[in-house]
Amino acid sequence: GDSVTQMEGPVTLSEEAFLTINCTYTATGYPSLFWYVQYPGEGLQLLLKATKADDKGSNKGFEATYRKETTSFHLEKGSVQVSDSAVYFCALSDPSGGGADGLTFGKGTHLIIQP
Amino acid sequence: DAMVIQNPRYQVTQFGKPVTLSCSQTLNHNVMYWYQQKSSQAPKLLFHYYDKDFNNEADTPDNFQSRRPNTSFCFLDIRSPGLGDAAMYLCATSRGGGIAQKLFFGSGTQLSVL
Image (cartoon, rainbow over all chains, first blue to last red; front, top):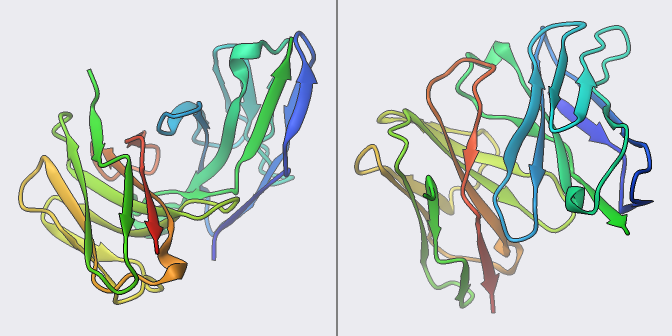
């Protein structure tokens, strides 16, 4: 079945540091890939997505590129802020399920940014 | 301004005592999902409704049931909660069934089983 593997946390960085959170996946066919973020006390919200190979999703300074050859979708940001502290989830949607079958999530990576 | 609302935020029940979690949405979305998220684990899809059509995941225990009386509301019923059912339960919606659809999540209900 489908699965998503992401680096375990917590990841602790200083403000303005460069961020990478690794994500790899296994899926049948060509899935769509997502990063969701969960701020303390809130629900998950979509951060960015990519729907085909070599697509780059970007939002709020975060980027991730759909790499089919390495089955990866690593999240990056050039300069993190304290307000980026949250839990980040990598996820995929598999077309073989017809679309409305929800997402397969990774376990989440807790990011802590220190001033 | 909240779009997907889950109540209550925290729910405590006793071992074996039925419990119902609720979710409502103001987005008029076709699809509603229920996920279970245990500590340090990935959210796991339990089932979803596409309009009135119910879709159960193959490994969802029979102990878990769901109802969707109308577009706006969806309920998760746990008939006989066990200690292993303690988790965060997340409700989400999407407009339709495309694989690139954005999901909108509620804040979750944290269930404790005593």
